[in-house]
Image 1 (cartoon, rainbow, N blue to C red):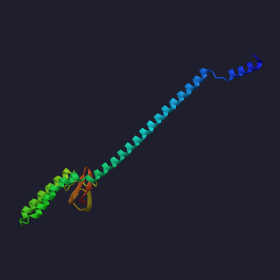
Image 2: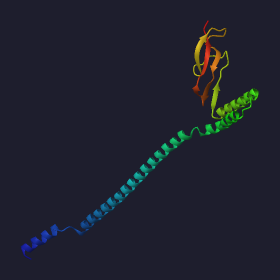
Image 3: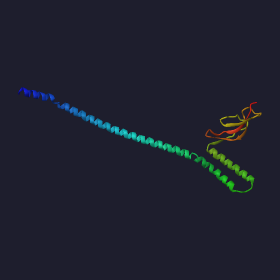
Image 4: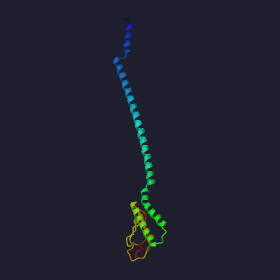
Length: 181
């Protein structure tokens, strides 16, 4: 072998990559590609799950708005059902043209009793304080103060009954209150 052949043979040997190193590089490249594909698949699954969750949240929000709308729209339905018999009694009273005032008074009293029952079923309670009861600004509205033998700031007369619903005052009772002496 000549010197030139030896050099070229050495250069060829120096420039070659060992087979095991080439195999390791291909294996690493293959492993990275598999990992990339797996990560892409996981990303697609996460995007899909996110879009589904977002759509479900939007559907729940929309259903919630519809439910609140229906609740507002039909909240009085139960209360109105309790008032219908009262309405029927009023129509029946107006359709009878008999001149007996005692029967008319009796019918009005029965209708008032029906109305009170319907209001109670609808959780509407009457505020009708007795004379001498202590004035409570949460449930009573004083129209005037009058001289009285009663203790100061007590109710003398009730001018108009008040009403509350579920512990909330709809209308306070209008009362006159005794003046301080």
